[in-house]
Amino acid sequence: MQHYRPLHPQVVDALQPLLNGRGDEEPMFKQLSFERWLKQQKMPLLHGCHQFLPGDERKFCEQHGDILQWDQSNKNYILTHGVSGVDWRFYKHPLPENVYDAYMRHWKDAKFKSMKNKSLTHR
Image (tube, rainbow, N blue to C red; front, side, top):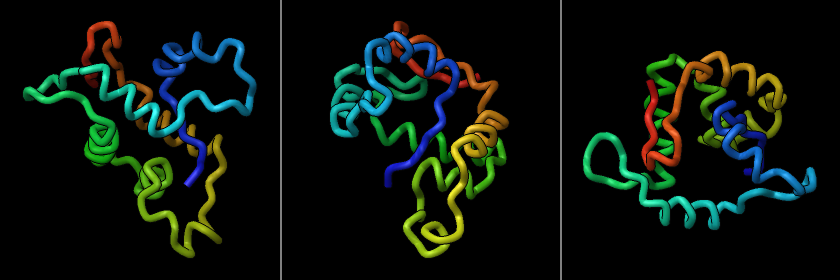
């Protein structure tokens, strides 16, 4: 499902140089290309001896969202969990600015280490 997805301000800062010269409708990443790029980065996770994989982003968001008591509806929209039903097609369709506001209420204090360090963390 194509949908708006909020980006943490720290991510926006990191991606800003990649946006220069792109048109408003030009995609930055295509799903498979982005997943392939992530796999090639060989970013170790802080706990354990595993590398970061694309599914880890969803897992972290799901687990940490519970800790933050992030509203289930917002989480489902951003992660596209179970949003193909009648409820979502006809009744639930949050506006991008509302999704971003809810996201930032819960995630604004998240701090991520630089990609230069080859690891991701949340404080």
